[in-house]
Image 1 (spheres, rainbow, N blue to C red):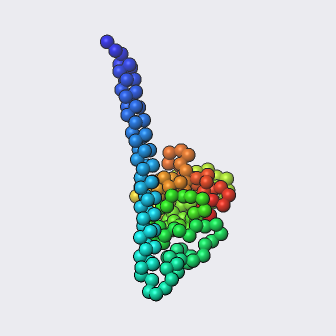
Image 2 (image 1 turned 90 degrees about the vertical axis):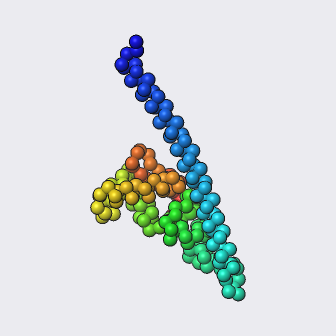
Image 3 (image 1 turned 45 degrees about the horizontal axis):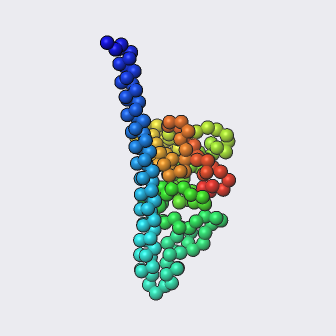
Length: 182
């Protein structure tokens, strides 16, 4: 007859295997979701550009597309101007890539990144969502903290931030590196 400790170890091992399997599946789904969202963003950009070109009354199609870009026809130093205006209005978080400006994000996301950038600048470690809520002058009630956690997790999934320990957030190395994300 097996011992009680042996039975517990068997159940623990089975549970651990299930957790590992679910984590692998979650990682796969997260990667698939990121790819699908990127494709959706590209189709949204294409639709908006076609709409702008078709609705331009007698104007040059290039002018219509340039007017749709944030900041007009020009680009800031090294910043790609292909981010649609909708990325701000609908609080979409584009996948981070070299040269993408923080201004592609809505004000809430920019505020989170600015707080983390300040922490990096003064050599302090990662922040929890509760600490962020407190720093932003928000009530530290569960609803507010969870709203920040949702935004932080979205920024992690899109490559803007990193989560070195569960519930603690900092800028991703690529974003905090020289010239990245600024």
